[in-house]
Length: 614
Image (cartoon, rainbow, N blue to C red):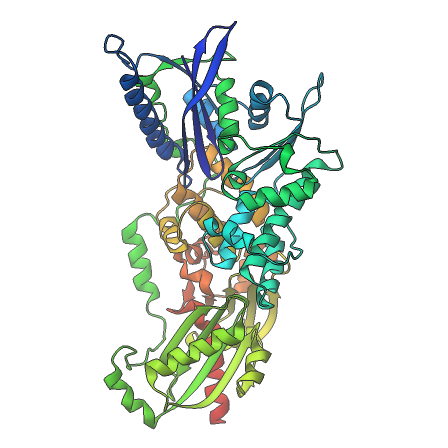
């Protein structure tokens, strides 16, 4: 017979198939097939493809291995069990046993590695440590809601460094120094990593520092003073694919290489343990033919969802009509082309005004002509160096427009305002709120409220009689900001633009609440357990961003405080589902510009134009 263990985690599905030979007296169990894939928030769809492919391969191989008079007919029996942070809902739905993943990992040690005293497992969004003592029940510990010290933490750092996660190990091997990084969660670590980047610390050193931080977090959060006795078994994707992670953990634990056990299938340990336990608790036996269809018809569960919100748009037609209505905002683009060099000669007789918004992660520039029309724009990532980012943007502008253009006025704002103003001798510098207010008022003169959401910050500007009445900003937490959506989009395997488009047409948006990035992980897992589609989760994030603004940052008593002329800006509002969520939650009409991510730079350019004309 065969035993199948399926581990459905927060980001991946792992499967392990065991071939069982013999009887209760003398029995051997061999891992004959494994499968590992990211499920991109569609476990049933991906799981179905994986299962069909894996079992078909096993059937084919077994048929070749058997003599002609003993053909493999697919009638052999398979017991099945499921584990993982998203697995419980699917186990219930499919009618197969569920095994808690820590129990599954402990079973592998019990049956296959009796010499092991400590097990350490790092998964996508969880980590666990199990202490084994003869004659005692294993002491099992898992991380809580915090994703610090997990694979997701490694993924987020790779994103900040602008590299693929597969490059992390190679970078870390070349590191010369290790710096302290807060590993409690992505929110705090971003600050430390951005600081290292701004100090021109090498990617190699940052990669190694992050792996060290993960190791320190695992030991401090899970061991909690308990002695880590050898031998130590390591399992989970980070240990399998990032050897440098193993080295840093060994150092943190104070355990030598000779006392480390790394199984051949280290990333499949919970799946293997689940397979070992699949014959218990009144299991159902399948033959190969029925087992391969196990996940079929289990992906559409929207009728059973209980935590849903109204759809942002009923259909594509309503969405397109909404876009057409919003396109009426007064914003003139220059007639000058940026691609036909023959037209640039006429620029020589004009004066131009430059605005730059130097943020913590991106640099934006806008060039206006004397009439306030947009002539040129640029958006680029800083990579920790605001000076070089702005210099590069200027060089690209001159390559496009020529070196003879006369800049009659210039202004900066943002994180690098003073640096760029001093280094490049810009004429003016203004605070971000004034830059965004100036831009909003130019496009919507009667504006009553401006909401700006950037990558890691949020500004709410209340306007009365054409002047700023009060300003609210977020504090330490970056939930409800652009990086909040971007992080989860990448974790679920989507580009942020694709993620945003999917959200607009979701029919059953999942209510994720207003929890922070760390605790939101558990809500996403719950949504996936209940069978929510990826578009429903994406739309849920759009609602969550706005709810965070309204109820946690602004703490509104009444939506009347916003007035009737609302302007939204910042890169987050390129996501139309976030704009629509604000409209539905406040019952207000909301306007946005064609360049929401450039509004700070646009406000600076307008300020330079007006100041130069005074």
